[in-house]
Length: 158
Image 1 (tube, rainbow, N blue to C red):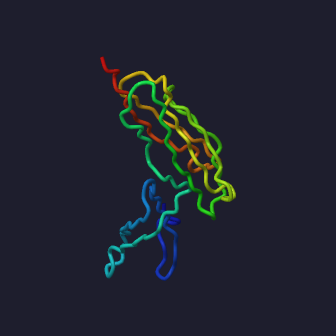
Image 2 (image 1 turned 90 degrees about the vertical axis):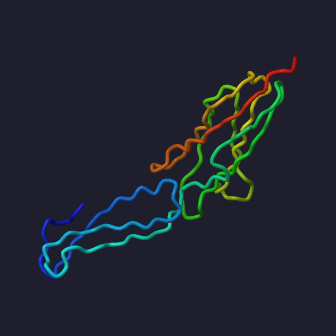
């Protein structure tokens, strides 16, 4: 978005550029500005930056692996909030009825580290199962973190 359609020689203006930083740790983008100046018909602007996520995850998904029926499996994931961020982890729930989740604050982290504990229940039916852990946050930018959950309960031996 431009602050003005025309800028007088020697004047200044503002150009707003939006960049989707989801899933990135560093960005480098270029914007070409077209002018009516015969000496400089185009100007290339470069944007470079580091992306500091509101929430760091020790894992991007939870995989319980292949397990026999009747066995409970527990996986843990660490959610970290950078010191300069003032957001909070509020709650977690699983869309998979066979996966229970709970949150535990890491002692001594001043609320900046939370452990997500996901448990595949022992009564999980045989076969592949898929779901999502949905973590609610206080962030207006990232109100939810969605973590895929996968697993396979093998059929009982005959």
